Image (cartoon, rainbow, N blue to C red):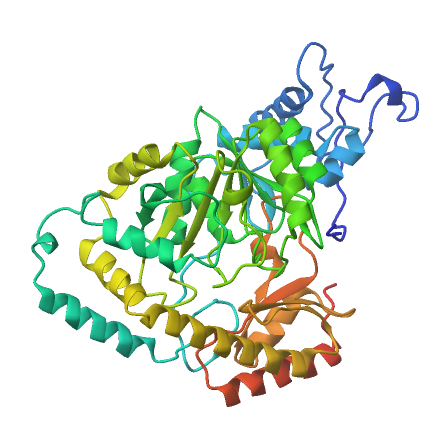
Length: 498
């Protein structure tokens, strides 16, 4: 399980301590919720849910002016420990106050009292798309290596243009995109998806769009809950915000999500769907083995929990069945050509659970009428003529080559890597903090992605960074940047944050 460091401890006096602990805690925790305030709320909490009682004390403090705009509240786990409740109780109270607009949560920053006089806005999040700058060693963005696919795509575009297909005039339909959906089945031939045909395939504008469409088909009610890994690709947060859903992180170990933690998170927060990346987890490169997948699937089955299996880094030959094969009635399998062929081709797809193909297709039609017909024809042609498979193979070779270079240079450090994963997980040595290491790298023209950017709000991140190997610089500059990082790692003087 990931273990996180401790930050500044701040306290609260609150009357919701379990009776069994009253003596040991002297009935009250006689400390303040934040430093330098005189706010000592006195509430009984009788007859109310603990999270509602806590929310009421926060609300009263804000209304009275004792908790001023901009004041930072304690992290969830630390406050929960000090007042004798579960982290879920504190998280629900914070979420309730956030929904009311009284608190704001920033990724990797914590929870703050909101400025009620300012116009409402969403807290900035990690951008999903970054500008390509070939003058710096950008290890932040997971880009597809350039293996000449641009010319191959151009050639197919010319062929499609010369076809003068009349269907390039009208809206795409289930009939006109059938060719592309059948091509997708061929493309995924190396992955065990269970029973699948073209009617189960729903096209989307990339894997992120396919995830959003799947969520639209799953989520219901005024306060939907999404469960996901405690360290998750930022796109999960973006999708949740778009759909006004709450995201709850689930504890992990070296095999991925812990089944018992998944069940506990559901009991505490509820949930309608688990979004997970079991084949290549970003940022940790963990692959969830079959035995663990079977355990997780059993938990999902018992809770009637849908699964979105996000396999955007799909290998042409997967050695472990997908969740779609293990739990076909509840799993949406999502992938695309983005990570294996070209990021410019916004062509993704979802394989719907058994019996959900029609419903998911209707969601897609309501959302965007269908993927652009010329794009579907271009991608179908790339798959049918073998160009997509050829490019995928060359991309895999390029990734493996760069991973080997990185491992040869950084191998003395605590790194987790795979030749089929386009990034490396680097746990920083004693003397470095992720934010300071990021700044030190930036000073040398190198960009890295700290673990904080993968952590959910109010969760603490391990002291690590993710290094995506798809930087656009040459192999020579790539190697030079890695050597600069190696030197930094070995010389952390001044690297520790005070």
